[in-house]
Image 1 (cartoon, one colour):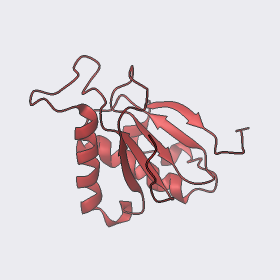
Image 2 (tube, rainbow, N blue to C red; image 1 turned 120 degrees about the vertical axis):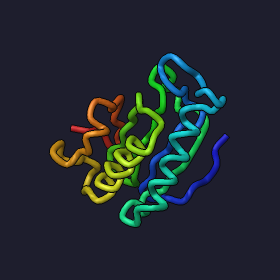
Image 3 (cartoon, one colour; image 1 turned 60 degrees about the vertical axis):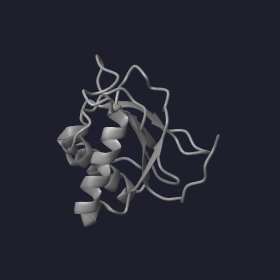
Length: 135
């Protein structure tokens, strides 16, 4: 059930997420999560400044009422689950830009003024790192 991945800053993308609130798959039969993962990999390949964040895919983050869900995490930092994205390169870029700022932050808190517009309104939960709670 668990597969080891390298430690470090990452975005875990649910590759089985719905395409949208109304559609499970797109017109070609692909899930939104798989499309978002592909878009993230395309954006990252073209943007060296975003390559310090790993893209890790897994089936189902159990946020099924919120399509195209990701978990942004880094060791010792507050993590965040975000969802309701359109599975395209604009969303992928915003997610990766936020994840890069998250990785650079001391505790995982990125000042609101530094949030890419594309992540605003998409936060679902924050998760404290093991051994901590948020204050």
